[in-house]
Length: 106
Image (cartoon, rainbow, N blue to C red; front, side, top):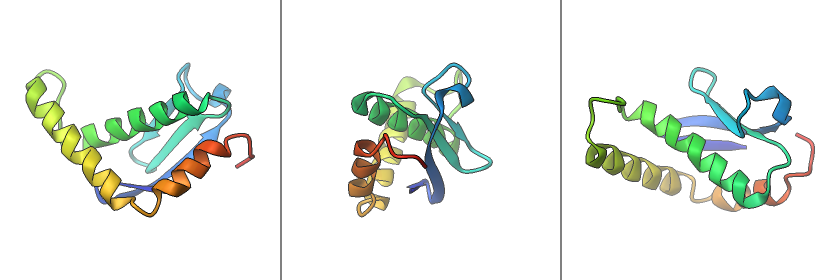
């Protein structure tokens, strides 16, 4: 499934947990791909997807770890997340099906 983040179409895919580096998910900014460990509890899976979306937004909005204030970071991430939700209005039901159908093979 595709998820638009800051104007870019990211592929959202479930992968075997052993393919991830001791984490539940990862974002590849060059390949425009978010990978989520298969077999996660639905709530943990949704949390992980949002976590990876925030990493993509962090990069897209040019945030830097030590140079930016917390308020600037929170403001940018809130605006970015709102844009993700707006841009994917028709995709959110598909995301829910992605979440519910987590036992299916990709």
